[in-house]
Length: 451
Ligand code: URA
Ligand code: SF4
Image (tube, rainbow, N blue to C red; front, side, top):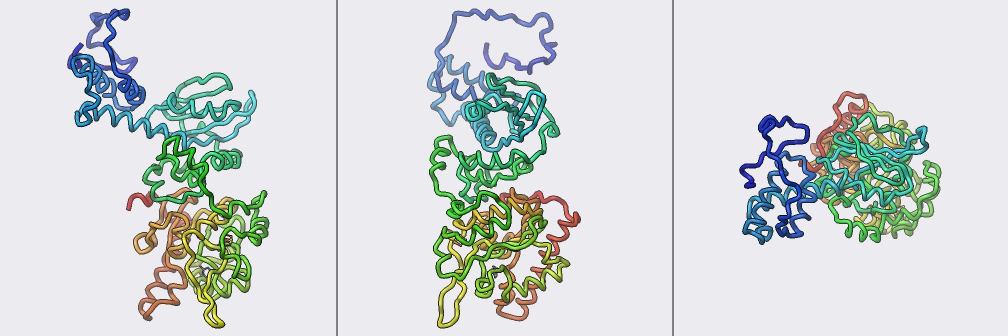
């Protein structure tokens, strides 16, 4: 039947068009035209696309393939070929993303333990995505719920059912630890490439995926690449993390960190400080001379500026968790003085595991990065403070995240005017963080990808 004469309707749709005269087909046709394998490979994916035109698109190709154009699939410029290819690609990407983003939570039910995840793929692709989870969790009972459909694994069979609303997924955090372990063991957590990640990761996933950061580059990668990433190096400090993650334990463990060369010349480690349930986390660059001697963050000249700025913004430092991207002082001896030196990217990455651990324990609602280095520790070296300063972003680590000037920038400002302006801006940005905490600002919708 030529495609122009075919009308595709979803299952259950009224067939009024034909009524009782709907043509009947002989399904035992012996006519089996040769169809290239590549067609099936495309169709297998494309057929899961949400587009109502998918059958039409697939049928048009098929019709031409068996009616004198057997090489059609090689013609990449053909609009009907490229249409099917893009349907197929969209589905493939969606499946990869589902593999990356699905996150189970543990629930106790009458039948025992069950793991439940809620996810929102772009297309109804559970049938394509579920076998991956079956192979990884064959001994667990789990369900993946999506708005379109759901899937259950009872240890033996994959069963598919109707869609589920968001509320059907448990909110419990019990599974978080297990899942962090799972992600760590399968995917490389050390890759910090937020701009790339955000380009691939639609913001809608973030609300169900607080540990999205450990997924990094996974979702744009093929399974082969994921395997390679398994062998990639992590943040070197990971090896020094304690078993139990509490602030006292972390602080103690950090004293013996030798994950990068900075520990050697420094006097001591300067770990973060503040309440372990602080709603606001401030992240600086690295300890300075005074901090290195006292072993506490932001107690030198920059710390004084910070204290004043916080006070101006109506924030009590006692309620804030204050830390640095790098925990050892990096300096260059100059006579009796020790001149501050910027940490290298490698040192920031090496130290990142400590910051990650602090984030896991403190779980701040708002993160304020003081200066470029802190921001880059989160989002990679492409971050540009001039461009993004003072804007609240949606990201995986907290409800809100923003970067502002480092207090030392005020001390370094070349003119009184520049100093005044930097100061005003720093205070205004801190006020913004406070306003967010007070519920005066809406949840951010801007992610760094929307630059
Ligand atoms: N500058 C920082 O970035 N952190 C400190 O702790 C002190 C100065
Ligand atoms: Fe460890 Fe960070 Fe110190 Fe390097 S700077 S030794 S990673 S604590």
